[in-house]
Length: 200
Ligand code: SF4
Image 1 (tube, protein in one colour):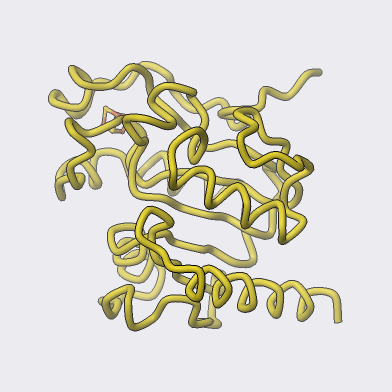
Image 2 (cartoon, protein in one colour; image 1 turned 120 degrees about the horizontal axis):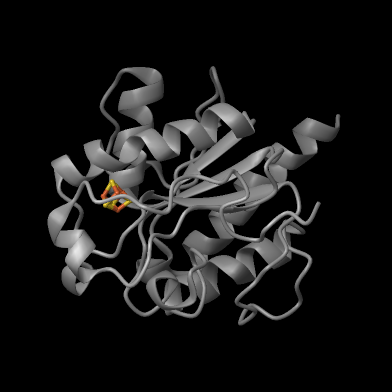
């Protein structure tokens, strides 16, 4: 059986819980990649110039290109060109906290995050990742509250830090739209170290 690139877990494509996002979105964008992945990246929401157009999280826009370059360098993507809009990921799954594009790429509201979280929880339950990389403040706050029962510190303070624990290790990452070369190198080093620990 052919496994679809996007939404391999076959989550619902007919969701109308967030009225404003339903009016604004071009499509619902669920996660994609390896459904048995050790590495799970979680962004904030589908981007207006990226996933909302391509249907694939973290493609086409600046954030997408930066994340795809990182995945290629880490060996988590089979591609060699970060502009590929149907990346074949290896041991890696990429998704978002909110699956529809908010107007003008505004921040998702508390209600929208609550509405959409069952999809992310289901992805996590089925993938059972060893490490989760929440991208940006919203995804980081959600992951710490949901899976550690605590508030997280601001992303600027904990970017590329490694938080071991159950049910997975957490390595927060600053949003690639606003990341420096130094911070990209830091997250790459932290994830390489985690990869090495998996192999030892
Ligand atoms: S953001 Fe999530 S919960 Fe809201 S309409 Fe889209 S898919 Fe449904």
